[in-house]
Image 1 (tube, rainbow, N blue to C red):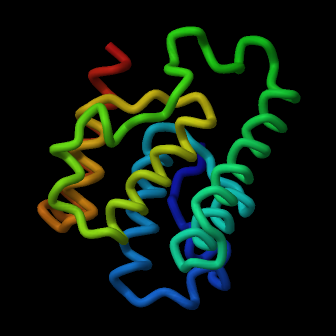
Image 2 (image 1 turned 90 degrees about the vertical axis):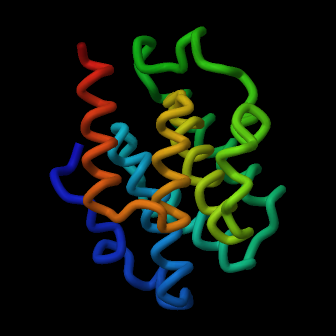
Length: 159
């Protein structure tokens, strides 16, 4: 995993059309998945930013993400493939609807799409992950508190 999350510096052209609030929502949701070990590539970021800015619809976004996931699975070593313990359907909003109720449409979408992208890579978010990300997206906690929570959760998982 890279030591620093510098997604906007890597691909600034993908963020040019966003206002500050939308940019923050997208970056924070990507950062949450990155802190869990997901390494985004340009295709992942382009797909998400295209969806958030309305260049593609939800169905096209899902099609692209599924194709990327299938390409990953085709080249993954057997031990890297999705384990049988990971849900086959991504229904994060149905699992914890109360965590999404306070988010506006842009932030809700950014949180869900970020979690979905990481899920397609084999990461299974839990309630704490979703709560931390949604708290950060709606501004209930700042970046420092978010990182503290994410680091503490990662430590608990290692134990």
